[in-house]
Amino acid sequence: MNSRRETLKKIGFGSSAGLLGLFGGMSTAEARERQGTPSYAKAMAPVKIKSVKAIATAPQGSNLIVVKVETTEPGLYGLGCATFTQRAAVVIVAINTYLNEFCVGKDVDNIEDMWQAAYVSSYWRNGPVLNNALSGLDQALWDIKGKRANMPVYQLLGGKARFAIPCYTHAGGNTPEAAADSVKKFMEQGFQYIRIQQGGYGAVGANSATPDFKAAGFGGATDNYMNERMYLKSVPKMFEVVRKQCGDEIELLHDIHERVQPIDAINMIKQVEEYRPFFIEDPFSPENMKWFAQLRQATSVPIAMGELFNNINEFKEPMVNQWFDFIRIHVSQIGGITPAMKVARLGEWFNIRTAWHGPGDVSPVGHAAHAHIDLAVWNFGIQEAVQFSDKMKEVFSGCPTMNKGYMSVNEVPGLGVDINEKEAAKYPIGTKSNWQVRKIDGTIIRP
Image (cartoon, rainbow, N blue to C red; front, top):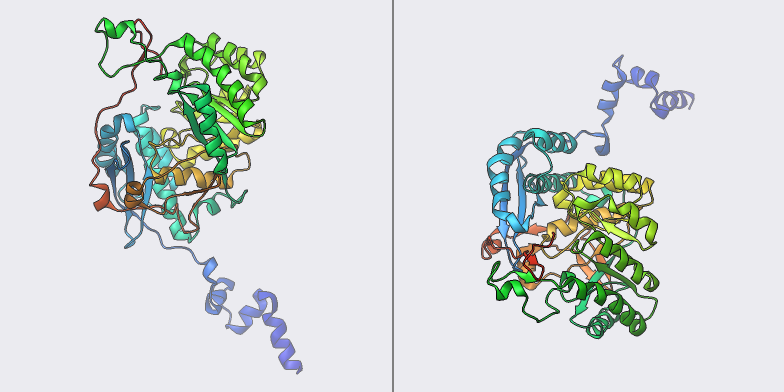
């Protein structure tokens, strides 16, 4: 018994002396190797990038670009969203011609190093074409990392901070009453946050009058007309009617889309303050950022901003000055999950919440990337809802799902979305985009 106790004492707690005694003077490391290394303590074998390519498809009409990163490990690949729908064809060239050559042979695990190197490799920064290509690469690498770790990406970002993701959806109509009816339908589906618009952005389409520039034959045949005065008058009235008909509990949002003069935006936001908007989005274009100081002095309405920013550094000064309340990043425009997480973490220090831009011209892979970040960051604010058509789900499997106003992701390793390339090829992309909006005299309205 005494001999047995002495032996156990030597082995106990993995002491160096015990291990050396048992294995004849080996080093501690060698002795532990003889004992066997637990699987969680073993290093993963390095995996290299084999190829990077773009996959283009448009199953719901909008041009979508997905980056596929293939690796030297058989069957292991990652997907990322690189959708710049207005100039999709040039993003394809950037991915297939430049990004592939840049990435082949690099270690898939070194995401930060590869992001920084790719960001400066063209010398010039800030462009939406290269940023979208970089975003697709970045998301695909996170997808691969999740698959290698056998975890959903949100686990790699810190784990869940909420059970699911509250979302806002879009309601509207050409009259305030029609907008209210639309809000009621979404409330019945369980949505607690609803964006309201009268017509398109800036009430485009709500006015059937023929503008003078069209009568004069100026501009393009498909150019849209915006009556600024009508729009500015319509928004407070719309908020009033929706509040009266739908109650005070529902959270209401609105997107100005940078389409009016800064001073007019300020005056309109002041008028809707009594209806307690959850936020007003994009009151000013990126060229007019200094107006935020005046807006903050004029009203307490929460503001969302940033979907047109190309560079994460564009968020620094507005956040330090607390000019807005919600980070309206378009994740593929800003460069992917890696920079979006940096902006989100910065926002936490200034009590600024996230509200990622998630329109229909973001691929399901991109929406999944939003959702994984949404689950993990403490300072989450709201997410834009999305509905996928049957055609979209035939191309993309594992899309995020919506239920009673909440978005959820697949509980599988990586981002959880895959693509059927044969199905994707059935829906070729185009090169037409219709973003021209004009005043009555034909002057182009930003953006």
